[in-house]
Image 1 (cartoon, rainbow, N blue to C red):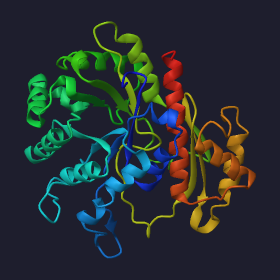
Image 2: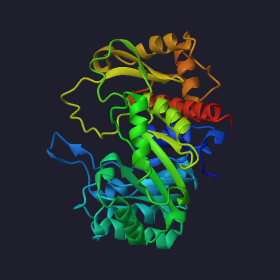
Image 3: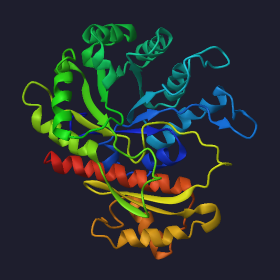
Image 4: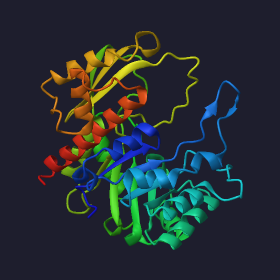
Length: 359
């Protein structure tokens, strides 16, 4: 049952992120409905062209989703692929993604936005008709500036063929400045009152992120507040009886903006992110090209000695950290530490939500 005890992590569909999902305990998976963002085709900087065709980029989506998430529900958004990009046969990227998910028996639910063009909406409508799983509408703060917000929402839902009862609402705050939290919550409450039939939607999620866009100004270690989690708790305390309790969502241990880097021009450094009930502990090492990955052993050892370390049994990410510190697990590569940090984060947040709501 999807209610305020569920958790909606917004994840970019890359190796580290989907490995993090696959490695969750089944009990945690039951409390998670990820919103998966399909990334744009990567760019080949050396040859000044895209690395592959859109067909090649998407071809394994269904198989991978099935192997990592089985038939569990998930939201799927292709907003990061340019509206002008189509498959070789002329089909829309979202149509291809949903077709692949359907073929492999996955529980994908398409995501639409008020800014989605008519072709995108048609692709969502096609999936809604074929799968009968409804659709999700993703609202951003800028949408609340629309003078005809309610009418625009109702028109969008009609365009994709769903009513409130078969539509999931995601209010995505992105990386807005959440301070001061109390004032932000008051403004948000006023905005939420403008949403039509809020208590009739199938689900209602509020998501956001305060994860830093860059770690450039962070020292060797830092504690970074999870402000979106503080905002959510205050919001729940203020909603009263007029607005249903929202579900919590965030961007896990990543900034909302997609990043495409020319790896020839940068020197990636070792970094380890560990989510605590209130903050992220972020540790930075040296450039891995010159210092290697063995530095992760010391970074992991430091974490295992902290009072906030939950122990190796808490999540697969925690297990990996403990075993890396002990020398019984490899030091992996950069992708390894994405799944370790993300797996730990998702497990921690599910526990945080349960504790907060007394479940």
